[in-house]
Image 1 (cartoon, rainbow, N blue to C red):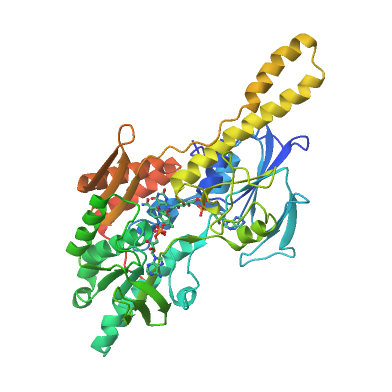
Image 2: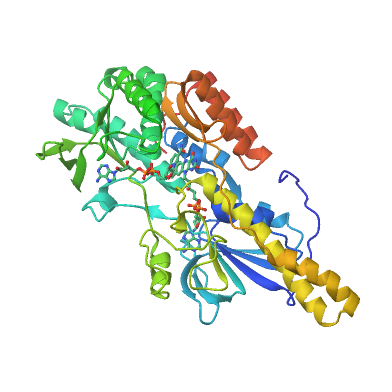
Length: 466
Ligand code: FAD
Ligand code: NAI
């Protein structure tokens, strides 16, 4: 849909129409933007990054299986294909004022003009700002750990990984220091940690073994998880499959082990028997889930009666912020009964676009009713009742997938009424790939990702430290 090089002309912003301000350009906001009918609204998108990122394949970027450019889609491409001009502002929303129905936006990028702070008014506000990586206040995580959430995180991991390897190759390094530098530690056995460890293993076996024959055998991968097992949200059989696959791949898993502190070259952990131990590392990837952004925490304080869940914004079944008439929230920024996944965020975005279309029809009918004849009134009244009957959000789970290394993946798929199909292996990996290819937003991204996979198979991954 978005491959068209020369999109057609767009209608101008219409001061008569209501303005929807959308915060964020991730899964939730982008899926809303794709579906919102701009015939009915003016739309403004505010996000500190001017692109959508396909997060499911981000772990592949940390070792160069996929190029980052293949996973991003400029928000302006999507905006430019709407029927009415959509304003895209690269800025962070730093304050929301529900009283005046306005937001403060700040340009936090490196290049700033004379003006870097401004305000925008809204009729409706859609909050899709996602969440931040959680640290649980553990000392040293921010300073020494690498998160895996954004494009720059993947770039940082890749650079640091190659730096560790080249530093280990520096002449006369002690064997103890070589072991430390080549120890790659992943904290968090959720899908992010598992997929990262799996990609790192593949890079080690497929590429590093050829280019660093004297070092590759010394590289160790360790995954640390506080719970008794990894992938707690997956079926028992798939947890066992993942753990045994990791064992075959020489990835050590330390379960029931809680990281207590991160220092420059080692982490301090509490072992299952309660003892305190240290683990030296060269690269530390921190993947312990999500926490709410400061903007969200700040907004919650404005609704002390209705916003009391620390995890995120409380919304009703129509995704309207509890306590507000005109603010809606979706995706990882919210605290709902659903897991914080792209699947949920994307379905919520689509749903909200439909809801807004229905609201527009309702508003139009209400204004027409005032001048309608008695006969018209009966007909319009019926239509109005239908427009007012807005169905609540319903989530349809399509299954959970996770790459576990060596061209194997695990999948928990809904099967029949209330049933579940748990499958793991090479065939599941083929399914994993095809599912992600079909979920990519544009033909351009699909073509680029397929090319990256072919390039990796034919030529191997690049080992330059960028
Ligand atoms: P995001 O996609 O994080 O988007 C948030 C947006 O808000 C961003 O554009 C951000 O720049 C912007 N923003 C931030 N602060 C502000 C602000 N103050 N003002 C304005 N804009 C702001 N889920 C799955 O279902 N399947 C998967 O395979 C999967 N794989 C994943 C792999 C990784 C490595 C990660 C990190 C996550 C994965 N997820 C997966 C989870 C999924 O990415 C998230 O649930 C999803 O991104 C949530 O969408 P969102 O729109 O709420 O937030
Ligand atoms: P997560 O919340 O799923 O897992 C984090 C893990 O870190 C937990 O198992 C937790 O016990 C562990 N942990 C927390 N503190 C710790 C500590 N101090 N020491 C050791 N372990 C600690 O987080 P993740 O993997 O980042 O995923 C976030 C969301 O994104 C989830 O909803 C997930 O389903 C989704 N996602 C889905 C993917 C997929 O479907 N393939 C891939 C990546 C993310």
